Structures are given as structure tokens and as C-alpha cells.
Amino acid sequence: KRQYQRRVREANHHIYKTQQNKMSTSSNVTERIAGMKDEIVGGMTEAVGHLTGNQEREEAGREQRLTGVARAEAAKAIENVKATGEQLYGDAIQRTGALTGDNQLKIEGKATELKGEAREALN
Image (tube, rainbow, N blue to C red; front, side, top):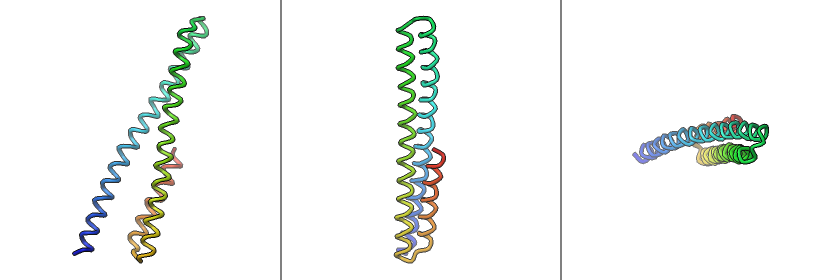
């Protein structure tokens, strides 16, 4: 009975973590896209301001472009942190499985570690 309860807790935890990762990854992708949009629009506004001699427009464009760059880079950094966290968590689960002789835990740990590596590669 205890082993069953432990498995249920582990399954629930895994489902919760998966849902959390999907939502946060989605918001980071959205944030990166918004940052890239600001970077492009700001660059165009900056160029128009420069070509027309409108210093105020040029400065506003530069500000928007730099804000977009920072926004996209921040979202990328968050994804890198998450990737490293998944790799470390997967490694810890894998080692716990090895210490306790739980092959299922070793497999789950390796899967989580690989998920972190994939996230890092995609970023």
C-alpha cells in the first residue's frame, strides 16, 4: 500500500511539473517573440528618425529596440536556467534511483535530464 501511495504521489508531482513547464515555456516563447518584435519595430523607427532628421523619433526607436533586445535576452536566460535545473534535477533523480536500486526512478531521471538538454539545445 505504501509503495502504491508513493507512486501516486510521484505521478501527481510529475503531472504538475509537466503542466507548469508547458505554461512557463509558452510564456517565455511569447516574451521572446515580443522582444524581437520590439527590436525590429524599434530599429525601423530609429532608422526613419535618423533619415528624416527627427531626433526624438530616432531616440524613441533606439529605446524600443534596446528594450526589445533586453526582453528577448531575459526570456532566453530564463530558459537556460530552467534547462540547467531540469538537467540537475534529472541527475539527482537518476542517482537516487541508482542508490536505492529503483530502475524506474533511474529511467525517469535520465528522461528529465535529456529533456533539460533538449531545452538547452532549442534555446
